[in-house]
Image 1 (spheres, rainbow, N blue to C red):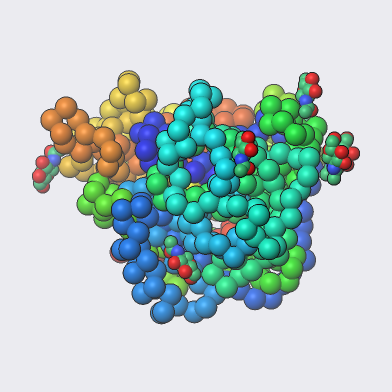
Image 2: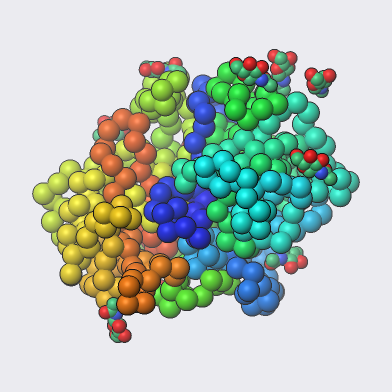
Length: 454
Ligand SMILES: *[C@@H]1O[C@H](CO)[C@@H](O)[C@H](O)[C@H]1NC(C)=O
Ligand SMILES: *[C@@H]1O[C@H](CO)[C@@H](O)[C@H](O)[C@H]1NC(C)=O
Ligand SMILES: *[C@@H]1O[C@H](CO)[C@@H](O)[C@H](O)[C@H]1NC(C)=O
Ligand SMILES: *[C@@H]1O[C@H](CO)[C@@H](O)[C@H](O)[C@H]1NC(C)=O
Ligand SMILES: *[C@@H]1O[C@H](CO)[C@@H](O)[C@H](O)[C@H]1NC(C)=O
Ligand SMILES: *[C@@H]1O[C@H](CO)[C@@H](O)[C@H](O)[C@H]1NC(C)=O
Ligand SMILES: *[C@@H]1O[C@H](CO)[C@@H](O)[C@H](O)[C@H]1NC(C)=O
Ligand SMILES: *[C@@H]1O[C@H](CO)[C@@H](O)[C@H](O)[C@H]1NC(C)=O
């Protein structure tokens, strides 16, 4: 997923929400029958000190929306988008993530670990207040003798029991949804979110036919349908969902840990957000991988669907004609804050800020003067060019100041490494603030539409 932990600056910079599996298992993703009605959703997450504010915001939104749309709030200084879900009758605030596939919420009885595996006090994991106690849910059924185990690109990992329960988002309810209830958690939380709501493909789910997480492997991977595909299979919704993520203001990002109503999630319908005529539908590309995690092209016989992956025709910005900007293997990930592009693109683009963004050797990311002028940047998909607002390219870091106490800013477009097979790039919230994306994991396509200037 794209889970980004706000607490740690470094975690912000990695493709933190992307799930990493012990090994890839080759199978065809489930293709599901169609269904009928719809529910929209949206949200980012509040930090605990802003909860009342958050609730007010949500109530205001709910009263104005159609019943099948939910509002998203901005959390962790707007590096994450939160959605309010119900499991077994209890509410949770969770990170909405198109970069992973599991829905999980933290177990009541959990042990917290640091990223090196040392046990630390539970409070250090910084989960929000709600926890899942299987004994409290009348509809929960344990999946015996298996383990839920997920690792994210940030180094965070969680494991514990898996089971089935009724999961509700907005007015869309799915019964017998497989979920994780991790109780061994190395997690960098934000004090508000209590789990993750994953919207990617079955291949990336994280339940294993073993009683110890260490033994999870491709040979004991038990795939399941994530929430959205189950909703379709249970004839509750049409084949697509759409998401809009609003751009936070600089001040909100720099100072306000919770930002209510920062977007929408709509199931089987469109988000209530205007779009322009600049729009295109492109195929979702597949991957396959061998045991060494080497991904093979979309047309390989053993390729399968994993993330919402698209081919990038090009990136355009001043000077872009001097470097190769075409690349495949780029995922659309609501759970990642920044864009993570091939090295050549990152180097050439960051040089165009005035003054230029510079690679900080300690942080390993491009930092930039908060008052710099950001160059224009467009993403060309399916022959159609989508502009990214320059305001998205200068991202303040709320929890990090320079020696003089000034806010540090990072570039919205960072270096993910060379464009070689097996490397995966990300268009995160920096890009997604500018478009409405409709995800169709049944027909395997996404539609991207440019939003008008806002
Ligand atoms: C989540 O939604 C429920 C039901 O609408 C509501 O009672 C609850 O207060 C919401 N929680 C948050 C944190 O917004
Ligand atoms: C909580 O978890 C610990 C460690 O897994 C276990 O020893 C203990 O029995 C559990 N407590 C309850 C009340 O389930
Ligand atoms: C789970 O494992 C235990 C011990 O190996 C075994 O006795 C039990 O039958 C298993 N349960 C299921 C449902 O497979
Ligand atoms: C787990 O593995 C055991 C032993 O190989 C097998 O009997 C069982 O059916 C598997 N369970 C699932 C859910 O795949
Ligand atoms: C895990 O794998 C190790 C090494 O292959 C094996 O000895 C052990 O029995 C396995 N444990 C479980 C619970 O499957
Ligand atoms: C999938 O096929 C490609 C060749 O098309 C091969 O390199 C790769 O190892 C295969 N993966 C698996 C898991 O068999
Ligand atoms: C990207 O993928 C397309 C097929 O989707 C393929 O035609 C093209 O050669 C690939 N480009 C690169 C640079 O790998
Ligand atoms: C940026 O400009 C504002 C005024 O526009 C000023 O208050 C602030 O100190 C400047 N920040 C930096 C890092 O120069």
